Image (cartoon, rainbow over all chains, first blue to last red; front, side):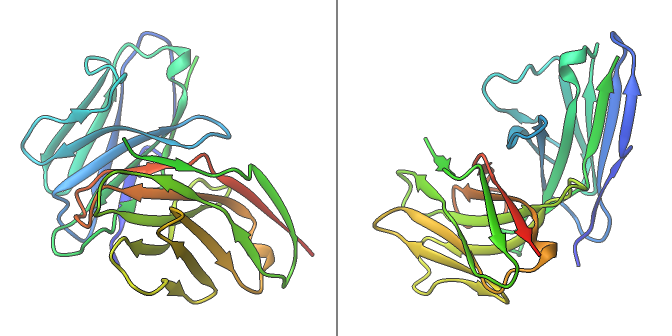
Length: 116
Length: 116
């Protein structure tokens, strides 16, 4: 099957520091990856769509300079939360899609970020 | 703009009973896809079932079936013979087309609790 991993699974950082979260497709090439955030007891909110080799497309209201997304290869996308603040604490989930398999997206296990 | 609405924040069901989770949607696109995902307490998103807007028959996957009523713009999930392991958060979601690169938006979710 199609497996997506995320690293780290959880991270605690101090306010003002930056945190990088990796999303990898382990057994397929992901032309498109998506990043979501989920607050406790809430739904997933799409943050951005990233395509390999091009700039990410951010959803309205998402700060591009704060949430840096890089899709450097067909198997790796990274989300960097810059100058993190406590309000950035959330569950971040990535998903990946592959060509020739219509409609399916494969979700990573998520990364829980806590900013103190 | 696309919108997904889940009006049941929580449901309690007796084990072995069937349960229907409601979902309505709104879109002006003629081509779209509808999904249901399960999110247990671990946080992972588990794909359950998919229905394309042009699919004539309702989708079924084991104990899951999607009651697709296009004119009413509803896509209810039916779980037959519920099990204790079905207790989780359930999200209805929609994509803008059949492409795997189409972004998915999620409803607010329904927390399903199965009573023994």
